[in-house]
Length: 119
Length: 119
DNA sequence: TTGCCTGTTTACTATATACTTTACACAATC
DNA sequence: GATTGTGTAAAGTATATAGTAAACAGGCAA
Image (cartoon, rainbow over all chains, first blue to last red; front, side, top):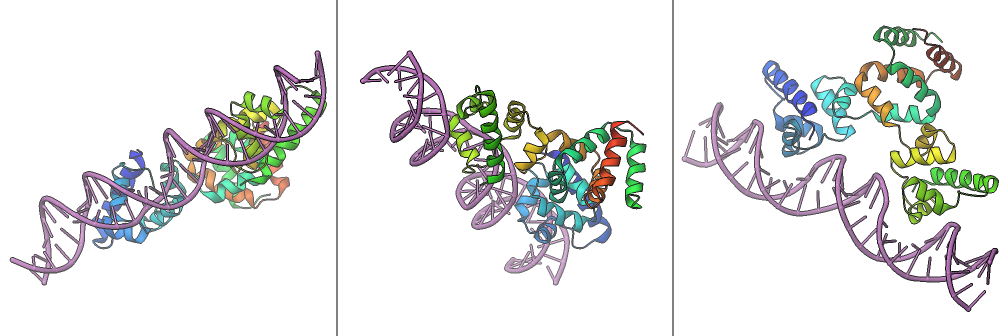
């Protein structure tokens, strides 16, 4: 169903397995995520849709990946972001529509300003 | 299920019905939206979950409402916004998380700058 | 008083999401 | 050579989403 997410996860898991040697078998990762191995197997091979938001976040933690990136690969947006948008829909809708067409540089500048709390 | 969305829609529809006199019965609006009257009835009374994104957008157009606001009342985010976030997940995630805690003023300033294309 | 329009009720349906359970085959290990 | 660990396969399940279809009761208009 969604090959990209699964491929990415499998690759990352195998990399970790090669380096760490322990704790990154499909079964162990599945257990740590809170799903059955059969399900993670299907997910990694793109034979099933991606897991739920909650499970993806746990997986991101386990693999040392950015949760928002992993969610994005699964075609999802974190619920805290959704809620932020839903609280001020007009404002955020306008901002995001402007920013999606803005050059990378501008976004980085705004992100930096935001990080520094320049209100 | 979701009373707020339905209540808002019904109120707005009845207001329009009172002013325009024509075209805003539940049955007519349902037809224009592309759903059965029974479904819109349940939606307005909060007896059913809200319609799909597509139907909500048509409804917004019919009622002269902002689609993003109506979607927000239904607990949804427009798919074009979702896609924008998914394309640059780290950047947008950081921006939105900063902005959700920022004062209204700052958001308005950034929105204005965005509108004016100040990159 | 027939016919149309109003909203509503009841029962049903199709598809997607997010999984589980059980069992299998192969490899390494003890 | 029995056990443990590896990934995979097949089938089933629970819940949510997004509705439809058909019928019903009351108002109003000619």
